[in-house]
Image (cartoon, rainbow, N blue to C red):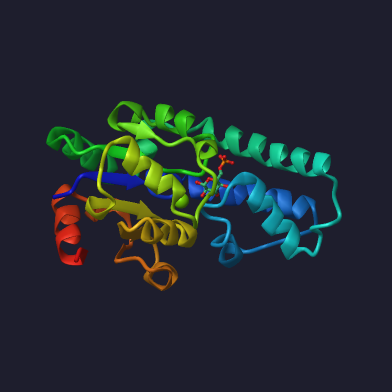
Length: 224
Ligand code: BG6
Ligand code: MG
């Protein structure tokens, strides 16, 4: 039986993946490194510092700036991103998510957040979802970010769940890889063409179909 559901946050619980894109894109333009949504797929699930490195690398500028300048760029992006969070309200929660969290709570199945974002607690508060999660993994508490399995493994460990009885839910290629290398069943949210290649067991276009019975069926069909 299902022992835990481990959620990514940005792009799974709410549309903050889009806010990250908007904020990075603006920084990219300021640095003369324009990029599109296709490149942005490589930033999803990746930490702030590593995302900046990937953008600088895209522009051939990985050796152009000092550590202090990079720190300033990352901070500038985050300030822009956090200003976009000001408008977040519970209504911005993706369809079906609150209902699923209530179902999990009623069944005693822990819901956990395994996000790379340091802004996760603030977002959960703004959405009024914080009390529905049993545990939020802090990204700095594990050695490796996604696609390494660390965040998901820590999440399972904190709630005493066996990885084989966990489902991870992700919108990012790096996140799907992380779930699979943790030995869990991976549900992708987004485009099949983008997420199947990373090893998703099932891909849903959006969160509307995420119900407890769907997750229980998925675990049954995909575990061996
Ligand atoms: C991930 C996002 O959840 O968190 C990435 O998918 C983001 O786009 C990363 O870079 C780090 O977020 P933050 O809020 O700590 O800069
Ligand atoms: Mg995400």
